[in-house]
Length: 177
Image 1 (tube, one colour):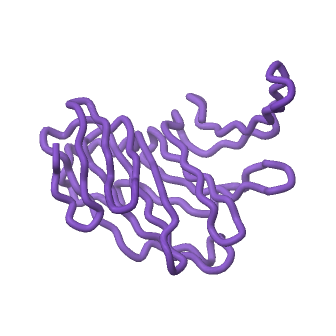
Image 2 (spheres, rainbow, N blue to C red; image 1 turned 120 degrees about the vertical axis):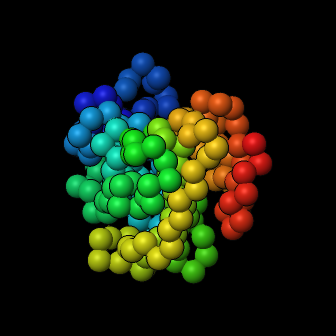
């Protein structure tokens, strides 16, 4: 992701590390792209991106060309928030993991200390007609630290932020800072 709001795809040739070719570039955000996360859903690969504009986008990756589709899934953090943070909805981090029964866990972090936990349901093919938010929750960390990184491992969310490190349980969301 770039400061210009674009996502760039590159072809890295393992036999020749000096050969790096740009395959594709697509506008995804108004402003900086802050974080990317890839998930294989059914028979499709989806790249999620978050940016300074407070939007999360989902792009399908073409298996043959490596090119990204225009965003087929997007929503704003403002639409998810309950006002528990300080109102700054810039998204800074994203991580995801595929769950059983056609669902995907998606975690988002922001500059106001919010961690958004989403569960997305999808059909056999990942596309705009089949992906929907079926569960959402916002947790605001104490002192509203800027979230720099998220890692979702099973039911734990590990969070690197401006005040240190926290861990949340996906189900219980108790702060273990």
